[in-house]
Image 1 (cartoon, rainbow, N blue to C red):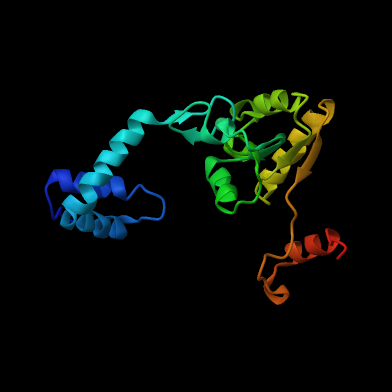
Image 2 (image 1 turned 180 degrees about the horizontal axis):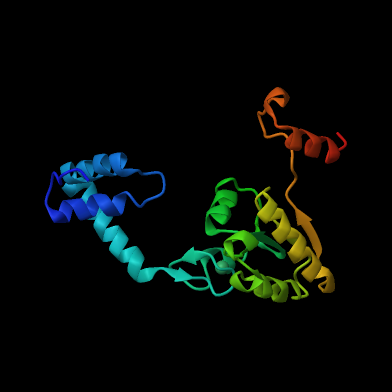
Length: 201
Ligand code: ZN
């Protein structure tokens, strides 16, 4: 354990920053030093923004999105197609789809994917709430926008079985060649999925 180079308050700041995704101990020190140098310009507004967000954050009771109002901004948006629900594992996936302007629909955040190895079962996710939303007569399609991993696909199959009773079309994301991707660099699984899911031009 190296000796501390600063007082406990600064060491604590560094330790907390080091817990952020993408920041290791070294970059946490760099970030802490940057904040300290820019304490008026960045540190004080950041501290205020964190405090305000902390006080106002709410989880949407309908879809599970994170917002400062409940129902969330997406669920309140009357211009969204109410016939489609896009099920995602995590809020990060919802935000990614929104950034891409991929779909103008409502969402449902499952809170993860089924993972027997990690002890995540159906009761740990909001699958029941999704099934109940899918029974709303206004809903015609549930898009399972889940990771193309074993856990993601297991979850998709599980949900598809549960949605048999609802009057909805269940779809999932296509697997295949990424936009701008070169075939030579793709793994065999992606290439064969792309061939299987080829579309007419
Ligand atoms: Zn919502």
